Length: 101
Image (cartoon, rainbow, N blue to C red; front, side, top):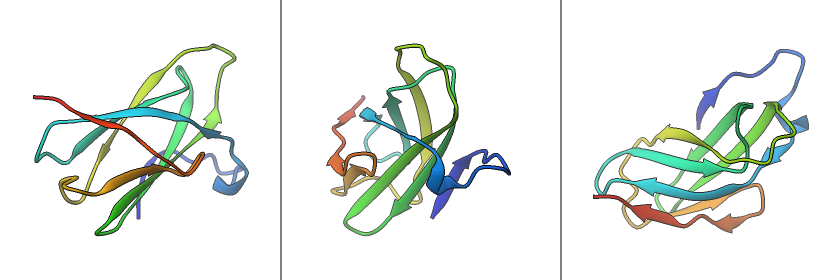
């Protein structure tokens, strides 16, 4: 499991509210996945689990704002995306990943 972000010592990851992932962007054959999320100007924790068939992503808000906006989080995968699906654990839906050239 890959953990990106900062956890606040007084908060456990289970008690933090999750944030919706709108879509992803990736350059083919690269390992950097950019996730567009339904939060901005917030302190976020990104939890990524990779398997041969799929990548699951959970983004949680440690400290947020009341602003209605989107932001981006960049995740470094262990392997290129390939044919794997990307699943948002916020709602268990597949995340659309757009390929950039």
